Image 1 (cartoon, rainbow, N blue to C red):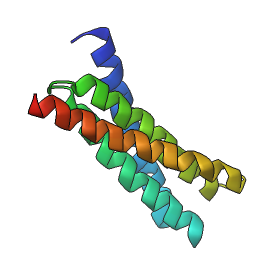
Image 2 (image 1 turned 45 degrees about the vertical axis):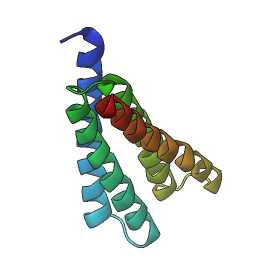
Image 3 (image 1 turned 120 degrees about the vertical axis):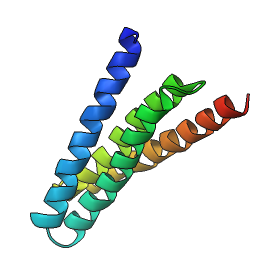
Image 4 (image 1 turned 90 degrees about the vertical axis):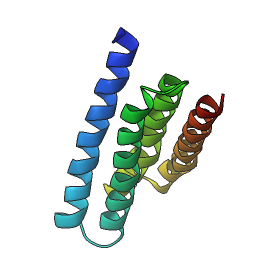
Length: 114
């Protein structure tokens, strides 16, 4: 595996670990809106961490994988920050993460349909 692929696989695996930790905190340590934000972020992050790992073996998979990992970090990370008390302005980052996730799926589709 190339160094770039190794880095992407490593970051995807770490993203999965963060998602599990955030989901557990949302389920057991937080209440109300913060718990919901943590759970939502964890759900999106874990799905896209797995998608990044699966994408590695597909055409254009590395590009899609980076979109999944980066988009997951922006989307879920901004929700985690809000859950932990960050200013509401941080919520402006969330849509950019969501857009990166969508782009990742489109890139993966283009690679598959080539």
